[in-house]
Image 1 (tube, one colour):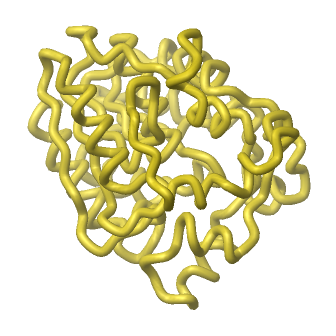
Image 2 (tube, rainbow, N blue to C red):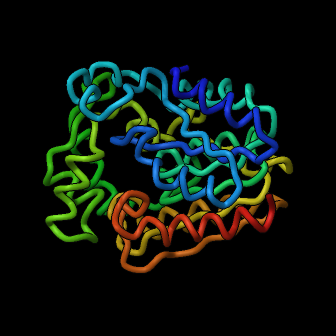
Length: 277
């Protein structure tokens, strides 16, 4: 638990506002949610941008010490987040992007969420499509088995393909320099082999009646988690008795939470959350 985690949790607990927990994915830090946090705070919620274990405070520090990311698994991160959420005075809303979207669904499946929004979420066991673009986006990690135990940075060209394909080259460069950090390789291997491993950590309890309402947001031009994957997650989540919805945002790639159009996505999430919390 970082000092920033503690401060945010204490601030949320000091109010009567509903906490909104933001969960980042691979190659990003909690600070990637800064504009979202301010937006939700203005809307009357208590934002909490939770860290993964050992997350550095800044992008500069992360790029100077990539080794701190190595070896983190989906289960380890989910348990870490659950422990942090347990210190909140009220059941929170969960908003996650990419592997953060998978983690939000895992935590919601444990009954920890009042409502959840999973944005371009990484797949879990039972999600069967294998889009070519997803395989290409994951190739910088999956092509070397040793990367399972390493922290793996993206080159600009790799980031451009997997995150920033739907923005200009100039904006892609700015996003890369502002937000991109190394990421643990293990979660990608876990997601890639989830349907082969009955004991995988990359699994979601989609039937828990305490899951709460769930919205899945898909970027139309996302290479990393295209519509086929998001929709397959949606179909699995429809087994739940709770409200389950999906929406596609046109002309957006995997960077939809951090690029110039972030507020459209944030407003889509906020509109859903307001219906229930």
